[in-house]
Amino acid sequence: MTARVVVADDQSVVREGIVMLLGLLPGVEVVGAAKDGVEAVALVGEHAPDVVLMDLRMPRCDGVEATRLIREQYPSTQVVVLTTFSDDDSLFPALRAGARGYLTKDAGGEEIVRAIEDVMAGQAGLSPSVQRLLVERITAPPAPAPQAAVELPDGLTPREAEILALIAEGLSNAEISRSLHISPATVKTHINNLFAKTGLRDRAQAVLYAYRHGLALPPGTSLT
Image 1: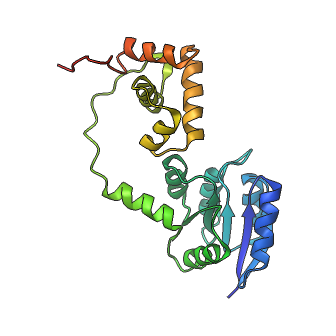
Image 2: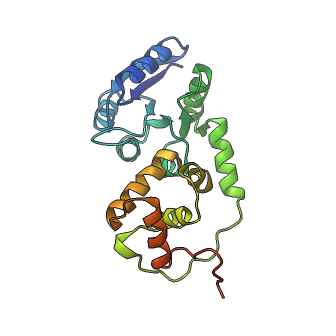
Image 3: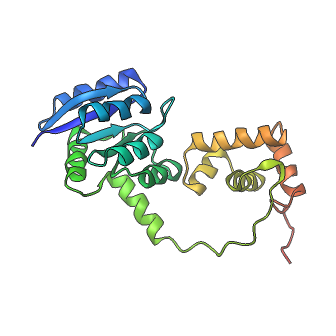
């Protein structure tokens, strides 16, 4: 059976390359290509494809929201995410929105076809790296019980406060990325946001701010 596929990616070179690759693969017919989530949802309504290969970072309507809309409005169409990102902040929102498959853009043609076939058969179409990430999360020790909610200064989010504490510990962006299992680009975005909210200019000021507001303890300070 031929799988009818819509490709959604905001970068024209990438989108055209994926369409060309799929055109060379047996059992796959590309019925539409979208440059953002709005077009992807419209093409699904027009062509009723079996599968959408969905990028995540797109203008107007990103891949997570487009996935949610497609799964709500056209439940017979499955979504396989095809993206550069495999961090927690990308993976889990996409899966919660209804994506049945998740591949990174270094996937080969055979892997893409296998993911398409898997989701059409009602199974999960996940790349090996994503499967490993999910297993790590499932087998990780349970998080400690949450403490009473603490109001954070200057409208910081819990993630921004967490990153600020790691900055105070002297971690680089790359080390924060590995520690929190998020991409370096996501770390940089959080840092830019927290600097804007607090009026901080550099990491030295960020360290002092973290100590002053109790978000981190100065070296040598005891908890008791």
